Each structure stands twice: as structure tokens, then as C-alpha cells.
Length: 140
Image (cartoon, rainbow, N blue to C red; front, side, top):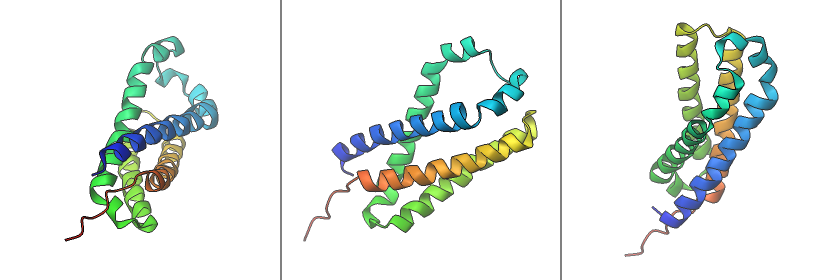
């Protein structure tokens, strides 16, 4: 594993997750959240928990990138990166569907989350594919 490239890629992946989460939740879904206000913490309380949000986004970027570096990167195959990303998107979407079964989230919101997360990780897969540079294989 190329440690220097891994660290750079994790930082770039974190920025990608942060920006796309902002676009998904603040720009696109803000009206959906306003319509379901009773389900969420008050704004001030959410803002006080922002360090936990950033930590979670960083951990997502780190795990995504480390699995990519360990299992996908050496193939240098964009379609392999997209297949990996799609699997991660399905995994995250499945978690949202499970939450729908146990929490009073509107089905339309859950569906939007699923679509958004799959699109987000597909983009993340392209970004990580382009940024991460595996070590060259050592010649015998």
C-alpha cells in the first residue's frame, strides 16, 4: 500500500464526502427535512454535534479508501472501482431501508437517501480511483 498516496486520497475523499453530503442534505433534501421537523434534533443541537458528523464523514472516507487501496487499486480498472463503489452504495442504502422499518421516516425520503448515497459513492469511487496511486509491483 502506498502510504503517502493513501493519506492524500483519504483527505480528498473526506472533502468529497463533506461536499456531497452538504449538497444532498442541505441543498437537495432541506425541504424534506423541514416537512419532517419532528423527527430531527433542533438546529442548535445538531450544530453542537457537528464534530461527530465530521468524524463520521472522515471515517467513511477512510474506510472506503483503505478497502479500495487494499482490494481494488492495483487493478487500475475504472469498471472495477465502480463495481466496488456500487456495492458500497447498496450496503449503505440497505442500512437506510432497515432504518425505514424501525423509525418513522417517510418512504420518499428513504428512497431519496438510497439514490443519493449510491450516486455519492459512485462519484467517490471515481475520485479515489483517480487520486490513489498504488505502489508499482517490484520486478523479480
